[in-house]
Amino acid sequence: MASIVTTVGEKIVGYAGDEIKTIVELKSILNSLQAKVYLLHAKASDFEDHIKNAELLGKKKRKREVANWLAGVELIRSELRELHSEVQTQGFAQIFLGGDRAKKLNERLDTHVQQCIHFGELVLDVYQTKEAPFAETKLVGHTYGDILSKILKLLVEDRVASVGIYGMGGVGKTALMKHIHNRLLERSGQECVIWVTVSRKFSIRTLQVRSPCGSLDLENEFDEDKRVARLKLALSQKTTNIVLILDDVWEFISMEKIGDLSRLLGCRVVITTRSMKICHEMDCQQVIGVKPLDMDEACELFTQVLGRKTKLDPKVEEIANSMVKLCDGLPLGVIALAKSMRGENAIHAWRNALAKLEKCVIMGLDEILGDEVFKVLGYSFDALDPKRQMRGTSNGHTPLQRCFLYCSLYPKGHRIEREELVRKFISEDLVDKTKCTTEQIDEAHSILDKLVNVCLLEETDGEDCVKMHNLVRGMTLKITQGENAGNPAFKEIPVEDEMAEFFLGKCN
Image (cartoon, rainbow, N blue to C red):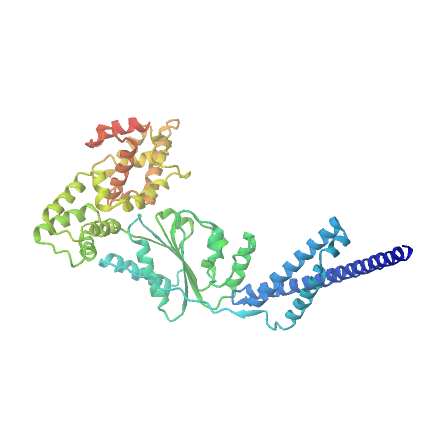
């Protein structure tokens, strides 16, 4: 028994000695790991700084193997922190009994160190891809042809730094700019053309990331000021001329925050918007308004979209011309109308469609033109409310919106004297009634100016009058019908003062 006990004791002491020896070795490995990871992280930081400086101008990008290696460094650091945490909570003995994680991690770290020795260059050249041309719609008539030539001359020959294009929704600003975009691309690579659709919901970050430097990667730069600094530096080093097209701008954009492109030699900015005021706020050197088509041009567009398969006899053609006239030269309306009548050759179908348009039956307008036309026009109405309140409740309308809706009470195509509208706005309490008369008059005129600036009202040539486009008026009637659904008074629209008395009673 004494011999057995002695033997067992010796084995236990030997095992304990081995465990203590291994724990000592494990401590040594962990200390070595910590020192190696510190040096590896310092190396990775140097690599990262070098790569970011190379990427700054957008002409270089990191190699994939380098990117993967940097990610591996972070993974090793994370695992080492986890191992240290377990040692603190469980002790060395438990980690020792759980396996050889520290040794394996040490082996991986040595391999990682060897990998970076053979990198050579950390970055590659970036070959910037050109913007693809847009599919174009044929421009009809001299109106758009003249504007196209004028804009190209300003950008190519005169080198105007900034151009603003404004007009009502659906008038063809975007279609026009697609032609400009494609003509610039055709100039044998002399221009770097960047197209950005801004729309109503935009952010400065989105515009910065979609930078005029093309390959400049700002996706992972979360500090706005740093993005601005990198943009300006990259633009100052540019080797080609840049044309930045900002389509569908709804509010002021600080050009300084996207590189202040228009102030750099050889760089130009073009914006499209529904508001002439935004063109001036953004300090556009040239401002060009896009007007609806004249009757001949509208008929030509209608025939083009209708297609050859729809044959019109003289009587049907006469009806078609009357329908086109109701679209008042708005390309969006003419195109929607033509598409809705494709394949219709029966005269009764054309007479039925014309009757719906003439009577301003709102559901008929939807049925013929589709809801998209009024959706596009309705955006301009919504924009009159800075808080973007939803349409559908009269209590939600701003004074500016109520004044606009009042203008729709006049007959289709009616030229309204500004002075008359000013008196109506004041007498119907549509302006601030706490102000004195002079201030009320100024406010009323300012409201009319705003409605003209955003292309919801049109000024008439040589007269101190305004008028409302036929389809814009249809949009306002659609809004008011939605607010007064089921009210029999709206089955037959009253005229002028009768309508005003009824409608304003509902709005106030």
